[in-house]
Image 1 (tube, rainbow, N blue to C red):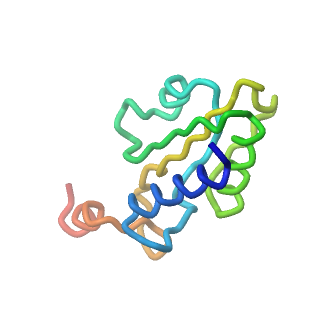
Image 2 (cartoon, rainbow, N blue to C red):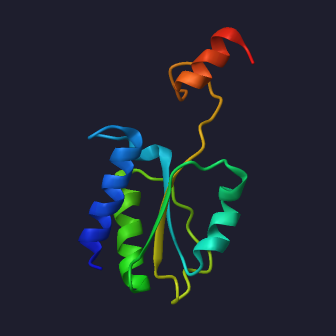
Length: 121
């Protein structure tokens, strides 16, 4: 799969998940891996903390790095690996970061968190 197709598919996924044609990418994380299941576990996917997750085989580590860099430039969170990626890391994944409980203008505003702020738990 070409990197432009992967970028388009992941962007469409984000837009659909956010219900917006102009979503904020800062609430998302993009990375690459050679083992999706292990990476999901490391990001606590199975504990229900991550609602939206998508992973695509980019074919090569070079392609995966290009896609990751593209989304990083769009504003996604990325953690640089001190040892670099493994050559077998050809999967690129993206997920919506869990909402924080931050309040005020800088906080995430979701209907459930607003309800909790107004009426308590």
